[in-house]
Image (cartoon, rainbow, N blue to C red):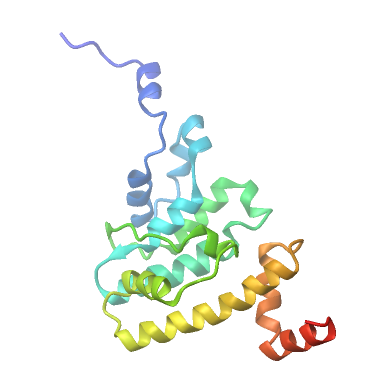
Length: 195
């Protein structure tokens, strides 16, 4: 005769946070899912991984576009704000708001741009960026992917320059400053400082 599970047994089984169970809950727009997690699972809740996986659906282009845009607008945009970051339940609710509630989605992992590139330690290479975007947008033509990669590399070059020139600046400040200044501003700055 099988031994009946006790509440302690069930709690022990639910120690790990199940990423795929969470994604299924997001696909169903299950706003109450976070409340049903054990304290141990809540401690392992990782909104960064969820936002990435949420947007990596495979299927119709329209659904991919929706998940990507909604994931950015409702999830990513404020997810890591210093105040929101202190409230994981709020982060869960923001992730749920990103879901169109159209049923279970198949997802694939897409490798990221090198962390050394995204943290402005290394220079971005056009071919690496093109390969990255070709995995995200497999139906796009090569000319468009080349153009996207060139724009990324050009913008990254400016950000890398700022990060090296002003190492005390944080990531957000570099992003903001790079959107304001031009290449002419950088050349003028270099002239004024004898470079």
